[in-house]
Image: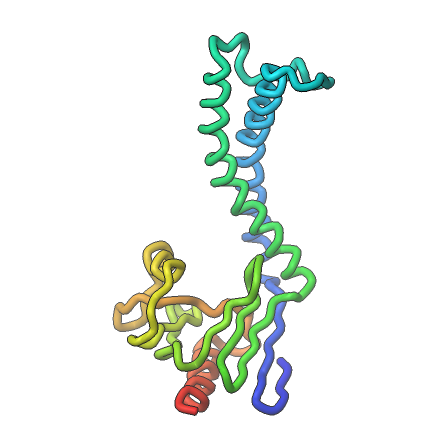
Length: 202
């Protein structure tokens, strides 16, 4: 934990979550391998049917003696979303595991708001004026609710539907602060609410 002036930064590595991520990475990786191989066979067969070059893979085809190239195209159309459905979580988990092992995850609190760097892409940024309050859900999740005047984004609407995390009064939360805190989770909620109270009206 790094404190400097009106800024506090918490750096952490996801030690407790590595086993779970390794398990799901293996599951999604296995589920991706089959459709990905079939998609490769499909594309390879389309290359052969189009007469584009030759290679050592010419014997590898998805459909034996297809009645029409459209049959091969149809197979590719079906396989592509299946491959993406399993491949995207696998790629995301791999990237997250790599970043966690390097200690690249952090939470930064400042007088303007807070930034959570826990994703594959750019950090999530929130201003204090956007937040109504922080709550503890299920004893282990530090979550937050947006202020009533704050317009919900599509990603937050999807979060409400998929995560379904509710606070003690049954209200759905709008997001979760990822982190492996060096204090109990209820104290982490108090910390976030202290910063919110201190700087929201500023």
